[in-house]
Length: 393
Image (cartoon, rainbow, N blue to C red; front, side, top):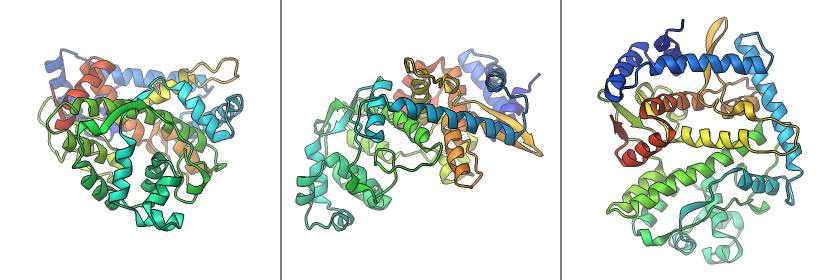
């Protein structure tokens, strides 16, 4: 019999007594008892089923990591083979076409393109002009799509420049400066090749795991756009539209380091990447990023690849699953596709680093969803409370 709070506490990296108290309070507030017991049992059952499907009885850390990498390596190879049947001039254009077929979301709420041009005219990027060897923003806008320029700026300018620019620009915008339009998946032209390495900037690297890692990220972004577009439209009817809009763009996380019983933080970034000891990582929380990954990985896993000899179904609903394994020391191994893709890329680069921060946030989000009453109700609570940074039961 698994002691749920001890078991989940180790996977989540938090104190078991905190989980025990939280579960008791949430049971009183929601009427849902035994949630942590249910999740612990489901987590272990999914791990056993996954290992059985991979014909593995060895539960050492190194072996589990190895077979997950092997599975992902094989799946990526099959996906790349399937990609050859998709229309497009090259691998990147084919990937963009496939992503549009896989993801069901089609529209978003975006800044009008003429307003984007205004931003560049008011705040010309010296790094951009220098890189393109031109003298004016007018010349840049005449020759390049404004969406491409903004994509490149993310890698060409500092975070400080970006924040200062958008702080100045968006302070004067109103809801009428935005519009609903189709989501575009653009493959950037070769001129931006030296700017940075992102999936839609076509720089091919033959590193196993990288394609699947970045393709899943692209699907995730589509759901992220859909989620935030809903918030943007919601805030467009309020008085504080601009401030709320900038808060969302910055990815603000409230500086709340203590919660009362029945309170959950809304954390829209992966804080563990910035500071693994951030106090907010030891509090009950829900992360919308986990929701986007859940949907993106579900789309990838369940898409009908017709007659292709491939099966990505194993990765469906594994984003929250993590297990405790041993190679002498006790380790937490993530079964999430993206964590394992990142681990594979790291392994192929000789770094032997495994990741589990996607899984950890997803498990918190899974727990919250169980108390909330499911995925749809979780989304509603997120939307209704997002600008508060906290959800109170």
